Length: 85
Image 1 (cartoon, rainbow, N blue to C red):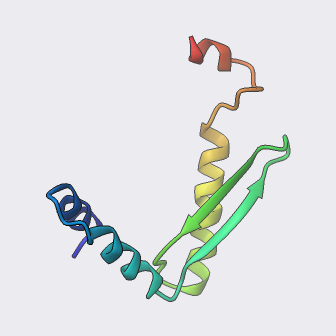
Image 2 (cartoon, rainbow, N blue to C red):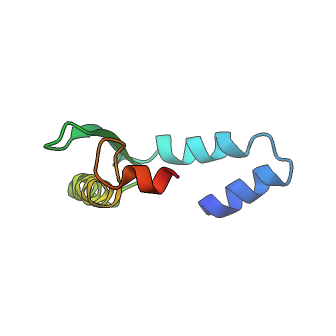
């Protein structure tokens, strides 16, 4: 069952759907969590679940962190005030 099907099952009244989703990923071998901080002191947590290999879990975490750090505008950065108006 895909993640989308599990979530749809929950939305359709199956109270055990999230347990199924958690069971799916806790039984996978290649999971990884890490807290990363950029050069400006902004921290994020990255969670990779169900990667296809040992090395992939690290490269996926790196790629996700790079995307977040390059796309997210932090409250202390120039331009944030214009976005929050």
